[in-house]
Image: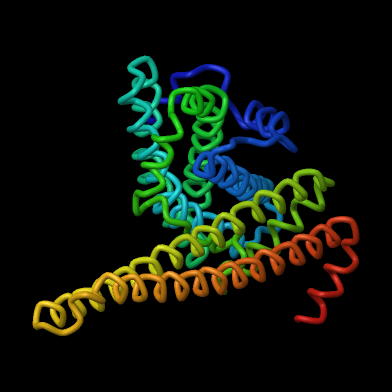
Length: 331
């Protein structure tokens, strides 16, 4: 069983209370932790969908097998592959710096191991039930266990551990963590800028679930967090392109300078060598500035497109009829 099961007082209700308190607030000034908070909101949305499907199954009401299966498929493929490993890296660093925090992060890491085993069991149970119509009791129990554990786990993280991590880690620690391969931006297949084909039905249901619950504020927060993550990805790509351009120009300038030195050692232009090396450096510097300008223009265009998308999505929050019209035209 997960370690957090020994903690009293953590439940879906208390997680909802945490999520409500956080709504509309700046969750963290550090992009990594802000991303983890945002992904919790995404997972919380799907956990509610899972609960609604299990409720319907227990009450012999209509169940959407696609929503049930796709929700579990997402939970076992995206959080387990990206979200939890990122958290584990952050936890390991925080535990090294603060021994008082080490026990808490060890507990959460053991939760990740437990969830990585429980999630696939629930997914297999859903697949078996959908194919055979049998095993409903096992499916209900496994999904309930998974959902309850996830709620408890996320609440412990946000109520107890994330604030301590914010206190313990310095800007240098965050900068070092950002250089880890696992921290590279990964588009979310359901809540990211481009929904993957296998999750399109789930993405529509998740958005509709938020609206049906009259949670416009939560949807606005969702859109804002999504925009922040997309903006961070745009800037990260711009940074990578800038570093690549700098490396290319340095390499080319160095090669040309070495050619000039070899020519000078051969007796050609020894006295003008400093001047010609300066010209080579200046030429590549100007070219690099032009490349940076192009990267800045492209990034500005991407951010502008992102802002337009945010305005459009915010418009759909306050005019659901427009969303219905769009969905009808696509179908």
